Amino acid sequence: MAMRTLKTEPPVAPSALPDLLDFIRHPSISTDPARKTEVAACAEWLATYLRQGGLETKVHPTPGHPIIVSRAPIKPGRPTLMIYGHYDVQPVDPIELWDNDPFEPIVRDGFIIARGATDNKGQIMAHIRGVIDDLTEHGELPLNVFFLIEGEEEIGSANLVPFLREYKKELACDVVAVSDTGMVAPRVPTFTYGLRGIAALEVKIHGPAMDLHSGMFGGAILNPATVAGRLVAALHDDCERVRIPGFYDDVIPLADWERESWARLPITDDDYLKMTGAPSLHGEKGYSALERIAGRPTAEVNGIGGGYQGAGTKTVIPSEAFVKLTFRLVPGQCPEKILRAAETFFRDNAPLAVRVVIEPGHSAPAYLTDPQSGFGRAACRALERAWERPPALIREGGSIPVVQSFKEILGVDTLLLGLALPDCRAHSPNETFPVENFQRGILMSRLLMEEIAAMVG
Image 1 (cartoon, rainbow, N blue to C red):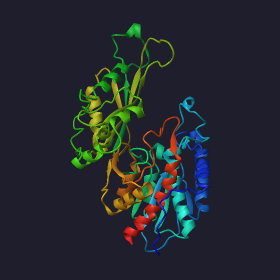
Image 2 (cartoon, rainbow, N blue to C red; image 1 turned 120 degrees about the vertical axis):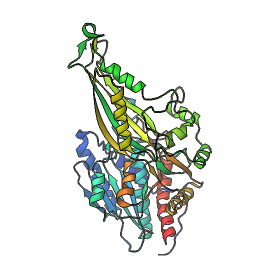
Image 3 (cartoon, one colour; image 1 turned 120 degrees about the horizontal axis):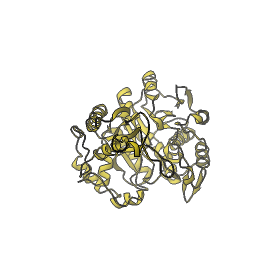
Image 4 (cartoon, rainbow, N blue to C red; image 1 turned 90 degrees about the vertical axis):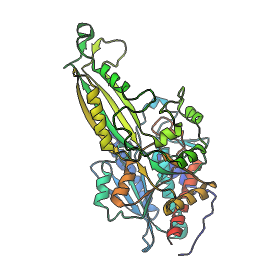
């Protein structure tokens, strides 16, 4: 095919923004069984949209929520790009903290405010419009492209890995692109070459057979809530290092070039303070906030509870308590090994006067790719052309478990091209997405196809 060069201004087709707002209006909360019909309706809306854009589209039912596979016309001999995203969103609680109905998006001061605006509807719609607009303008794409869009990312993608295994042949590709990560700062294009892994578990502490009167039994029966607090307090030393034996044994240290490169990025410890509203930063000694988030492992308490939670006082010794934890892992660490070590740690540190039950949760290893690979350089060129400045190279603290699954099952690397701002409030009230990022994301998607085609052809 003839080489074509796209203009690098980020115009957006008149219908693109209203279409995104329609997409967002679907309350596709995957974790809520009462929303199952609405999640399915969102999948059907998206499938119809893709078909109208000229893509052959199939909605695959699963034991949970549907998976969409949508493919542009195939041209033999050209490389194949898979674009992954998800149409499900987080719950909206606490609803009273929203400035507007979470599923009735508003555009204010250049930002879309709604649940799913950034995570992930705005980002995946930028790719969809990039592909549709390119196909409409030229009649064909410079390479083969298909979308894989699921409805369970926010609840662990339980049905995606079996789907990848079952349809491995049909999903064969040369590389995957995902925009479900972030930018280090506004208008700073960002190529994420690594993600932390994750390992989750819940510790349940059982004491007496029922709640007991704290006056009649206090001092004679060990309080499970007290044990929960002690176990949590024992997790870290005074330098905020995790005290689980063996936790750091396999950690691959940050490279000098990474620390030097990250130190030059336009984000500082003060920026993290402003974003979080915390009184001060806190964490493992010897590392900046960015280094802790992007390249160091952590043990985080996500929830803790037990006993009376209502107004006023109820003088009980609770019969049980719980702690929910996730470990964010870095390259070198094995999630299963960490979970085994954590279980041993909690059992060894719990008194015999209580019974401890450990329930492992979802897990995934860290992901790391080479930003200087051929596909990595193509992605960086697309980002630089779309944003008119060189991209930042960064690892990100979050986890996208399916990225490792793409590597293990399909044998391909993933290009992480985030359009989310650090203060986008994903998973929180008043989630936002800049209209400019949507526009430039559409352009970036088209440029990415062009750069990969040029690299291979």
